[in-house]
Amino acid sequence: MSDFKRSDRIGPAIQRLLSEFLPRLKMPPPGLVTFQEVRVASDLSHAKVYYTVLGAEVEDAQENLKHNAGSLRHMLSKEMKLRTVPELHFVHDATLEEGNRLQGLIEKAVESDRHADEQSPEETEDR
Image: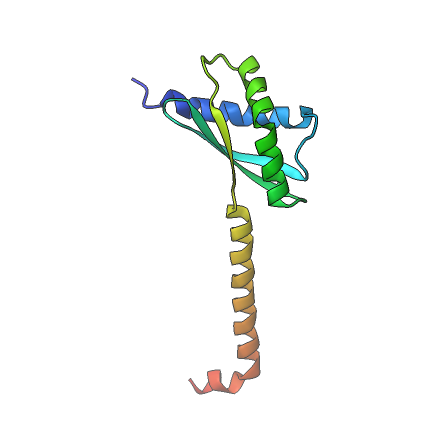
């Protein structure tokens, strides 16, 4: 018997279709929106759509996606063979920005250590 739930298979399908539908909207969201993951509830009533946005404000993209949720859900209903299409909830995925922030902090710490080592080379020779 398969260990996969139906909701596990539907999430990637919704993600792919939403990416296809986005440019077809009358007013697509500003910037480059990328859908990272879709998590569908086990009863298929709700789907959390995690996205990133480049070249625009997150708030503007969020408002646009929220405004277009009904149209996107309608497009999904025409493509997917489901009794009911999950209600879409868009959630900004900040892991990319957080990763970039942490990378910057690491680089800054390494540079600070390198600068400190260059300032006092005689201390390292005494050890």
